[in-house]
Image 1 (cartoon, rainbow, N blue to C red):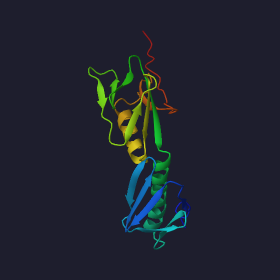
Image 2 (image 1 turned 90 degrees about the vertical axis):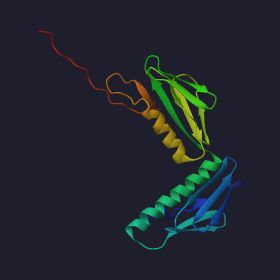
Image 3 (image 1 turned 135 degrees about the horizontal axis):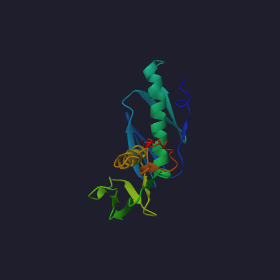
Image 4 (image 1 turned 180 degrees about the vertical axis):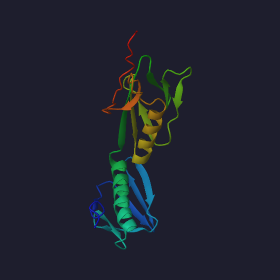
Length: 180
């Protein structure tokens, strides 16, 4: 049995879960999220817990069992606590600033790089070289962080670019040619 899939999902106070056919709708203090399990698993509410069960022991069923348990668990975490990703910018002249709700970044290009905030995502720029992305949907927060990071990936020679906080970049040695 899937070790992740068999774990029951606790429903905290202030969160309501509605099961509509193959759709699970979760409402909480930070909004409303939903996921459809497409009939691949069975989701039941037992008291103040949700239980995800699979129909058979096939390879795909085992994979979907853990997947949908974790997706529903992330919905509950998202509507109660939310999710956050932090990025840091390194490089001379590289900086970020808020422009309304959008992110305006100077990344060494001849033009500013502007990233429009999707619905449900908020940006915070505590200092010009730090970006905090917050939202209630884990998938969207991670996707936005990846898209911003891809605007100027960290290059391995000087280490300039956008990276996650704590990300380790392996540096390469430059040319070390001898003069003859």
